[in-house]
Length: 248
Length: 248
DNA sequence: CGCTAGCTTGATCTCACTCAATAGCAGTGG
DNA sequence: CCACTGCTATTGAGTGAGATCAAGCTAGCG
Image (cartoon, rainbow over all chains, first blue to last red; front, top):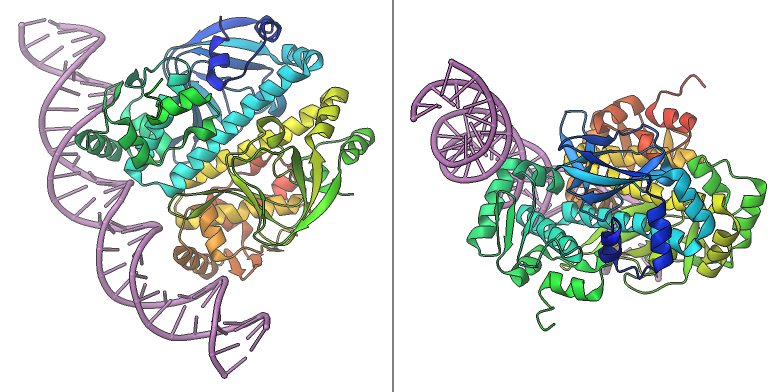
């Protein structure tokens, strides 16, 4: 059951045997408190972690002490599968909320690689999904203004949470402070606060504490220039994430 | 010989047989003119391209017609190896200069995957290098100001060109317009022009046309807060890219 | 020679940052 | 019960980095 969101999350029609093979590679599960750094930049690791519950960040610490998110993970994401080939990461991985993770020793992943080429390619695919998300983050930072960035970020989270049934498309829980959102969008917490009020005042969405309500999805998507294609979701989820799936 | 830069580029101590296997997977080579779009966003592909000569971009076209780079490739880079697992890309790949590429059919890559787990993991590693670069680009956009961004970009290009012996650490050819640099750094061409003059006036580096001269590497690296670790270069090249390798 | 692409420089404007003050709220302890 | 602390959010005033708009300049090339 631990891997069920891996399936949902990216439309892989995984077979029963593949799933069994994958689950057999789990050594144990662990829980971390908020703020716990699970993987430290530059430190060699020999396991990879699948996020089962909670949110985790990938972030880079700037020399001036600021923190910048380069990725955010929801349940079902392999947070550091790339460590299987890289061994050392170029960033930290930390728990944003209380989290539960499943631990995959790299030795087990090697066995999978030896045994099942298709499943291996699926795992490879997952690491490439991360890269596709990175590219959208680059695009967001380079090309959108503050309110578009925040809107784009909320659209992305809505789409990804939809895929794992953690959003119903109208409201979801996002346990991030405005400072966290700022770190993801390259904005100060003060400006995030202003922008969220704008989005509320223009009846697109309301973010209060960790409660996000999508008021007018189409307006939000269009304001953010959001395109779910890069998430490689199944087409139904993608449609719902832009408000084009009302007919289902 | 086509793959020689793949070796240099990322410190993989690849064996003779691996290399032979890799080269045997090349179906043909092709040349493209500047501006040619080799891979179009969303179009399914069944080959991947290794860049042999010239520069290629990965970019996303914004709805307003602007173009934003999400990656830049030098000889030795697999420009769209990720298409092997993704099949459709979320961005375009285009020639910035006249380029020569080696074509790897995905069918051949599948044979490699079936035959050689270690080489497969090396290829996987290459796609993860791209992701690590993406993360640095995110960091650059989110956290550095205009002159730091440009300096950081030039440091990155210097380091990567050093690795393939296309820079001697003091000067190199970078056939990009100021508009291109702006698209890579999230700046307007006008502001790139101003920033390059600042860098020249403060004796860090000089960019004139496609000729880049590193005048004071240490100052440039320190200004840009550049850290070559994420490039996963061999340690000698990394040291030279920050000016700490003078003793060699 | 004139045309075009790329680069430079100036004037103006605006978005988002910084600094600063205030309020709400949860937890803690007297 | 209230006072105190710390964290988060809100709002205002002032500032500045980089965008935009516009005008020249330079060099390569038919």
